[in-house]
Image 1 (cartoon, rainbow, N blue to C red):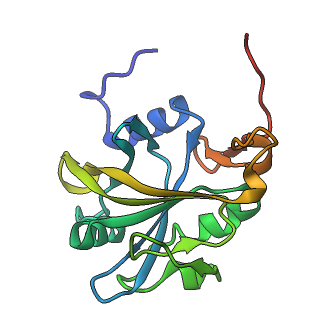
Image 2 (image 1 turned 135 degrees about the vertical axis):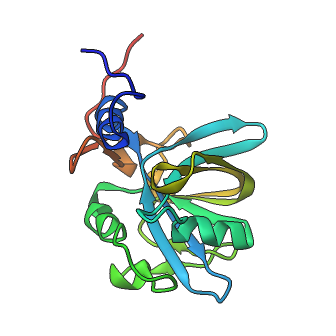
Amino acid sequence: MEIDPAKVSAKEVYKTMIRAIAPRPIAWVSTVSPTGATNLAPFSYFNGVCSDPAVLSFSVVNKPDGSPKDTVRNIVANEQFVVNVVPFFMANPMAQTAADLPYEESEIDLANLTTIDSVRVSPPRIDGSPIHFECRLFQLIKVGDGPTGANLILGKIELIHVHDAAIDESGRIDPELIDLVGRMGGRDYCRTSDRFSIG
């Protein structure tokens, strides 16, 4: 089978991509509005970019009406955000925060989550997440327009928090201890607890 993105709908391309590019890590991004309202949303087009400067990336597709999502609005306004990773035991609250709420209505409250103050940025960290990346906007790249367009966010990592319980005896992050979830196609997810080594 061959799929030509120019000859099928954007929806069909999307469905193909999310099933073919898998598993995908999840950036659980917390932001604040100009008035101080908190926002939290998961994004599975997420990855590291560079270690010097320390930069990560995630992509946010526009709303069905073509406008930017609340996460993008907040980052454009104050250039700060926190990426929280998602352990298995927090998968359901994470899914809850994907809800399309009115602007400045908090998904953190909706999912009954507890927050921790950040050190270098104003958005809070999510209690229970074993790793947090405090970030400032490095670059925003608009990719396309309208409802099928997206915003690629590059964030300069200002500070990384790693929970002590996530560290093994060698002083490194242990994948078994953090037990993260990844996104597959459709409604499916996976866990990092099933791994193998090569070499």
